[in-house]
Image (spheres, helix red, strand yellow):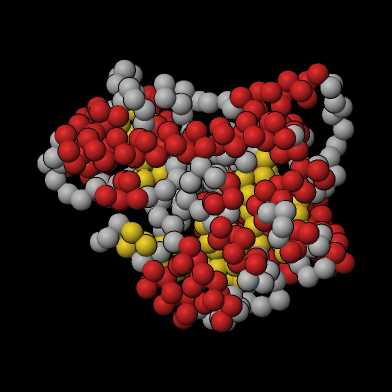
Length: 402
Ligand code: PLP
């Protein structure tokens, strides 16, 4: 009998499963709105021109393939922290941010979870929004934290349940860890306003909660990397010692290169050095040291004035294409088709995703009858829509809603 005969089959990943169903469909009208990866107006994967130029620069310098340090490429981590916190932020200027390169955003969350499980001096409990990116639950559970939840989304208004959110954080034990999506909340596309972030900063201070920001979409939400960093920078300017997970998957289109960073605000350069020494001890037995190529690309862009400018324009271009798809979809549903229901949230939501409010059976009907694939919670990746398919999508939604 095989050693593994008792291993049960696990459930398929809810998001990657959508891509498999899409691949198997042979209809030419098919649309994949499941996976959160940017597509251009022809529906094709998009390699940024700034990334191509950075790669050409790198190739012409014939760099070696030696191991990186455990915490990654030092210039890259410094530039990543600068992008998130801003050059003028006090902990950045005083060299008090402990930072390490990570295997994209997921790896940053996992390093953060493992570090908190080892060193957070209070109850090791983390509060996640409902709903949240599904992997958050697994990452923090497997890191050794106890996972609890707070209210975030109001199904009735298809918007933020700010009262419920505040009540739940108010009722959480003091000094709990709380995870916030820094911008472009996944899966809802619903973010707090700047005034609401200020209120949350006060509440977090009053309850002495520990804020952990997941910033997977900096620049992707509004088109501006500094506007999207508002929550992070506001909390830091208010004196919070935050944890931060950054990803360059979406905003540089470096998905498979796995480029990210994890950082912690500390009190002083001396404390930063102690914390970084322990980050190394967390990382070394996980994967020894991070991959080289993607960090070199990201660093080439972040450290070169002309490439940086070109990248900023490209991020803005991606965000604007998505925003224009929101407007087109809203107009088609409300003006052209007079589809029953309220669709204002399509325009007010932000970032890669929209929570349409479509019910599971409607999503199923869209897949079976119209070859349109999305997750069963009614979330669509706006980036999967383009000039060639948006009318067909709107008409198909109209049909399943009636
Ligand atoms: N956090 C959120 C909210 C996400 O949506 C994602 C990706 O979809 C990630 C983190 C991590 O992505 P990656 O590991 O590809 O950087």
